[in-house]
Image 1 (cartoon, rainbow, N blue to C red):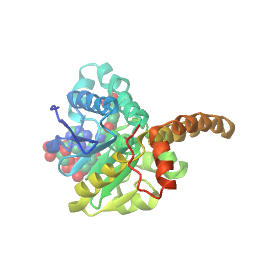
Image 2 (image 1 turned 90 degrees about the vertical axis):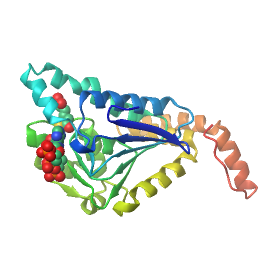
Image 3 (image 1 turned 90 degrees about the horizontal axis):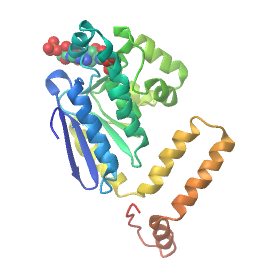
Length: 262
Ligand code: T3D
């Protein structure tokens, strides 16, 4: 895949690389379409059991390409604003609903929708030099790409309001303290550590991970009684998998389990 997004599969992991480093991986229409295609492809490939999203150069992604956006606004505006429904929402929906874990390896600055994409992933591993900036309000926009849903869940309502309204940069250490990222690693180690982590997930009980993802998402918007019922259904689904049966047999036989993702 080209057009600013590279896609490759190895060791059960689909690596999606935002590759427009000269513009800090700012998202043009072409790039948003390529990213959507990449995440949909990873979601639909049964050989892919985990996804790694990262950026080339010194940025993870700085959100909307503001040069392209300014041109679209100057020529009428409708297309500029329609991109949220046409591009950003489908990308975030694909990341958050795919039945496998998605890891963001945040290699540098993540701003606007670029930060929102990282927050939509199931895990975030940040390089020491990474920083987050909820840049929307600085250009007179509100949050998009799910940040108004993900951020309060990650850091609480008070911090989410602060991050979105003040839009001050948050460095990797602050991000770790706030709970925005799962771990911070040395810049030079990010690629290797994030790949190792994604490969570990790819060797895990994929269907159980999918059910956990579904349960967490459902539980975030429903009552405890409703969630208990959904958990029961999901547990029955996991209970019928080959991975559950072989893991139970392995436990009893004191053997190391090998999950097949089935
Ligand atoms: O309708 C809709 O489209 C709504 C959708 C909205 C989704 C969004 O994502 S809105 C938010 C868009 N993003 C931003 O507002 C971030 C803008 N960028 C910045 O605030 C800063 O660049 C950063 C804090 C991210 C990084 O700062 P710094 O000092 O490390 O780098 P820089 O010098 O500002 O930027 C380096 C280059 O990247 C520079 O280009 P130049 O001058 O070297 O040719 C800069 O213009 C370019 N760049 C940075 N961000 C963008 C960008 N070019 C286009 N679009 C960008 N978003």
